[in-house]
Image (cartoon, rainbow, N blue to C red):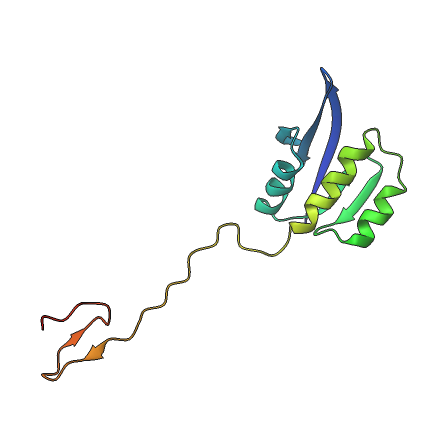
Length: 121
């Protein structure tokens, strides 16, 4: 099971999040969705936020309630990150369009034609 750490920093009035896995910097962003997406892509199961709160992914409403009681350095950003991580889970990263082939209708002489092909009448 992979574990990741997120640490907050403030640069020129903007709160940034640094995502580290096994001590290696994976992403540095101001977007919670970017961090949550990286967690999903890398199949991270446990997340430590600011060294004071650890949770299992995906998060739930109960996790958000527990996180709201923690004294984070950047509480609003931390709670937004916990909320964004509710979408992280055992899902496919890229959904492929569903493809259903329509059955072909047989012709009188045994050949087949697609149903939306206009007839030559």
